Image 1: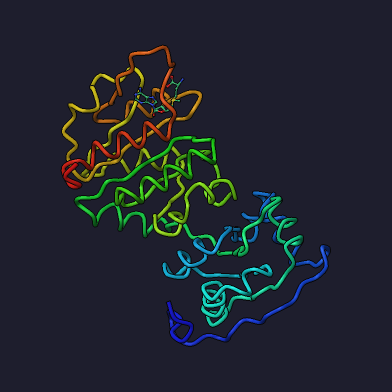
Image 2: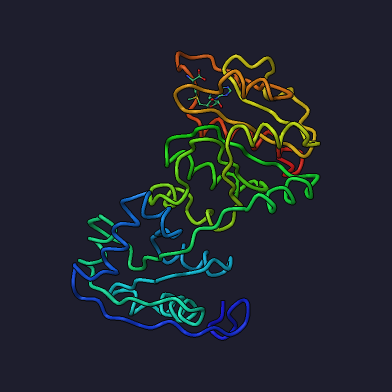
Length: 286
Ligand code: SAM
């Protein structure tokens, strides 16, 4: 990572501002990005906490809007380097107290670096190209997934197995919510994401050359017995309701992960992890 070579050529460097007031408009803006999905949607930005996420974002070429540094960060060579890189790419650097960082992020012990980034989702055309152009890919599709922690954990797991991307189908929760971003541990910046309606997903799957594998408590096939022909799309259901019949009917196979105890089902993120590692087993030589 270098402050001297911003991607896309030279840019006007951002400014450095000392912010001391809790009522500063930039502090209010960041608080609203943390608290309100509407504000994230309206502005197309989001907040990610921590130096690791800032370096992940910068190395993956995400556009940084602001980088907020607490007192400790200003003493850290790594944080100063991240700030220099972000600033060279046009980001505003805010220097604040620990109390302001805590108020911004609603945390008693805030991270010393907090970043504001521009959201990135695959466009329809990019999704089409990605679905068509990767014959060995493994994808994950999530139908109406509600829990931010589950979504973040799934994005992290998708990254770990080298999945091509995660499709957020229907009313799936916001990938840019602070809780989701936290749970991704930086993988948000490395896994392509797309949002689409159920109808759009069904239309794309109807002429997709790959295999759509759903997961269902009443699935006909033990997940270890399926031949996962590539490309593979793994479809996971909502935490409460599971996959509705019309979505299950789209699938070429319905996988069941055997259970022997009294649990009603597995946690969604755990089930996704088991499925992804089984699908990727031949490639990962596990
Ligand atoms: N009550 C819901 C139902 O009847 O499907 C439980 C949903 S479960 C918590 C959430 C999702 O995790 C399911 O839609 C499915 O994708 C996956 N899942 C959980 N346990 C599973 C299992 N044993 N076999 C296959 N998929 C499972």
